[in-house]
Image (cartoon, rainbow, N blue to C red; front, side, top):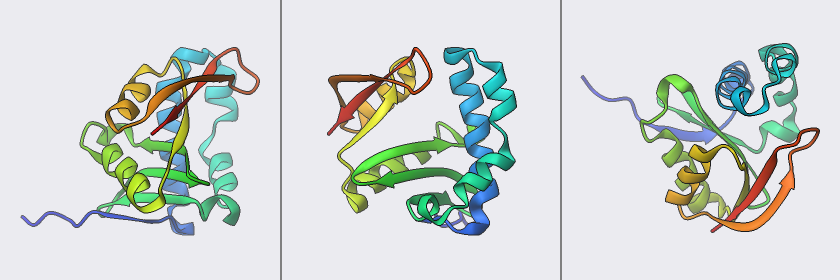
Length: 152
């Protein structure tokens, strides 16, 4: 059986529902234990509202997807910054996140990103890809949790 070709490409309008699905479910799994806000996780955070927000050309223009026949991950890059990187939970630990972050470093010259301090897995992941904590922190908007600045 021939493997499908991996393609990291610009997101298109037809990818929006898949991007929204990935974002909603991965955020619920990763952030609910940290924020403990079911009202947000299961009320405000809905696939349709996320899809509507990401359908904006201002956002969509900055998103790349990992597509090997199925969109399995996405990365949002603006101004040398990784704004978001998410891989569908079913496809994690298969090197997809690594391919997306390496793409961002090589093709988009990313230099920094903010990560949730308590998301230790993400901080370790970025560390393996050359990003280190700078000591700079800021509060995540409307929460008591901190984001940490990572640079390479």
